[in-house]
Amino acid sequence: MTAVVLVVAAWIGWPRDEETDEFADRAGNAVEQTDENGGDGTTDSGADSTAGTPSDPVTDGEVDPGEPALEVVDEPEFDTDGEPTERIEATWDEDIRAAARTTASAAVTAFSDVDQSADDWWKGLSPLLTPQAKAVYEDVDPRNVPVRQVTGPASVVDESSTLLTEVTVPTDVGDYTVMLVRADGGSPWLAEQIRPPS
Image (cartoon, rainbow, N blue to C red; front, side):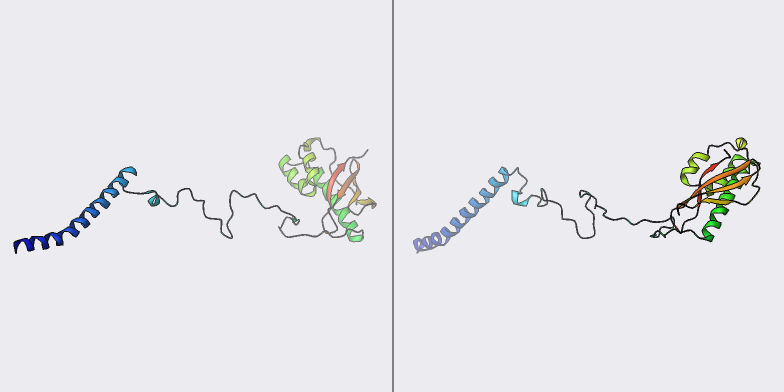
């Protein structure tokens, strides 16, 4: 009887010992793999999956700083108010002549108004000049200007161009000649030159 019990116990315990040995073998293999990977228990597959991957592509509406700027093909012209402008055809008529005479007389009047400070003299004259003329006349000393007053009506003497003209202005030292220019038919006349009598 005792022999039968021992045989049964041995038969029942044998598979359990085999499973225990197999489990121990698996645990030992896991420990060996841990040691091979630096002892931190992580494998290559557990490393940061984001390392070495390219950044996400730029989405619509965003600008990639690495891309070149877009090439501008056409750029509209703008006036001082920032609105698109179109050139107006220039012609001669009595209103244009009157505007030229008025501008020339105003330019010589401001030029001859020397009984004031240099800053005030320049503030009165500069709005009547072209940008090129401003660069020339801004360094003029008003004390050296010989003319003192306009003595008669101005006269347009050259209408060969619709964008450029010459106007004579009588003064106390003789006739000044003012060269006027304009950008187009819708732009005002501006003084390019104020020439003393020859």
